[in-house]
Amino acid sequence: MPKFLMLARSDARAWEGVSAEEGQRIVKQYVDWSDRMRAAGRLAGSNKLQDGDGRVLAGNGSQIEVKDGPYSETKEVVGGYWLLEAADFDEAVKLAKDSPHLRFGTLEIRAIEEM
Image 1: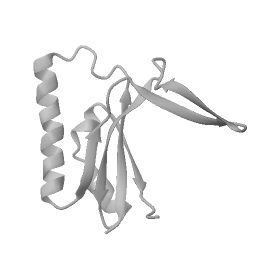
Image 2 (image 1 turned 30 degrees about the vertical axis):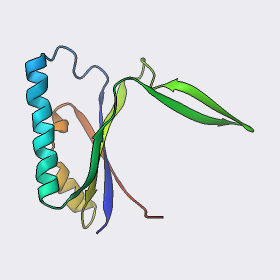
Image 3 (image 1 turned 60 degrees about the vertical axis):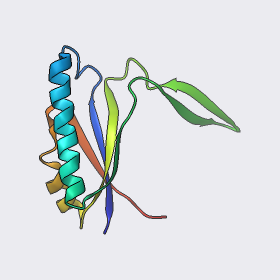
């Protein structure tokens, strides 16, 4: 079955002002949604990305430039991903429509081209 990468994007400040109790309730909604996808045989993998730390590599002629990132001035961040199995884009979109992440940001769905 084809695979689709679903990237969770949101404003870098989306969680500001969320209490610890509310944060736990929201995280449980993400876990429950992922568990439903897994139980349906549609989840091939998922992870939350660590906040604030990463590296950005860029080719600079014959050199490779490594920078710290993502940058604090970035308005939109990728916070995590799910690897879904679906027949086509329409089914992947249908699976994603009840994701709790849509309350906080956007989901980008990309087809995986197996290599």
